[in-house]
Length: 405
Image 1 (tube, rainbow, N blue to C red):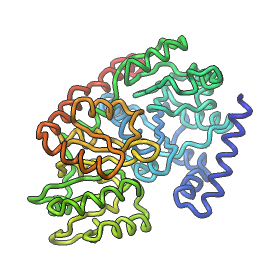
Image 2: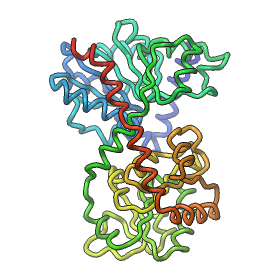
Image 3: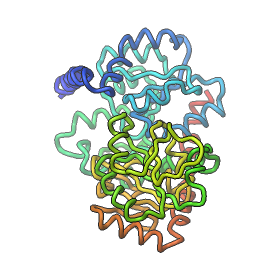
Image 4: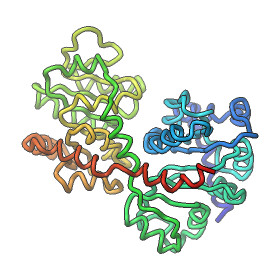
């Protein structure tokens, strides 16, 4: 199976190169990895120890951020180095001041793993949620470098738990300790005789609660929202936006903020075509009287939710919904599409009456009315977030023994 894995990695690299000729995200993926080891050498001293944090993308960065920043606060002399797999994480956090350096993760080959681990000289490696790379994990294990997975989550239909998943199970065997989100994940890992597992919960609760406690103020959004009922649609895709445009037309007394997952010019223009009475965030000056504010900047969404009365989370008509907890932490109920089953917090929010899943425009209108008719739904959402906090403390209490050495 290793030869097939290696072939897949190389083939993936070729495909991305082809796409980079006409896709800006793929172009960033390739450009960011060009001469990557020279870039690392310019920033990182291999004679000094580092704590290596790796994130797939921006969402995982925010998920792992509480652990990373608590370590830095408690151990200011520790040096942190960060890698990202996706441009959507790296391009936004490449200037993050809490690390010695932020880099793209080179593709998972044995040669790249050998070079990068020697360049970083990690005293430990911390990966968030679901990034599992054979060569990097094996090289860490071979060098007796502790490897931790935080906010891990597993499902019985994943390849690790199937008869054909032997190679993938081997990757899991290189992990020193798993910090998992739910009991199901712990039980599944035990079936594989993996017992170095702690049920610690999801660090995202700590992050979103912190953000809701002291959010960044956005003057333009504040002027737009003043004395109005606000519907915030976050991380939306075209399928979401089609439905939301109908909701906006049916509710002219509400104002809508649309913060799409992709903000390339063509997509922003298509949103404004759907929502005729709209204005781009970057063009907003003075009074903001339009019904719809279209966000064409990255990194604002987690602060925008503070101005909302109800939220819609995009992605549910594609591979899966985005972050519901950022909105819930501000005490507003949420709506999302049908593909949410992989997300425990989404299922929980539905169960407690703080969220609704919809499959069409009629269900969207019904969910909107239902949540509005229950004034306690937002409070239920924020209470849920508060009750789930504490994952970071559990992780750090375990890591303390190593960090104190």
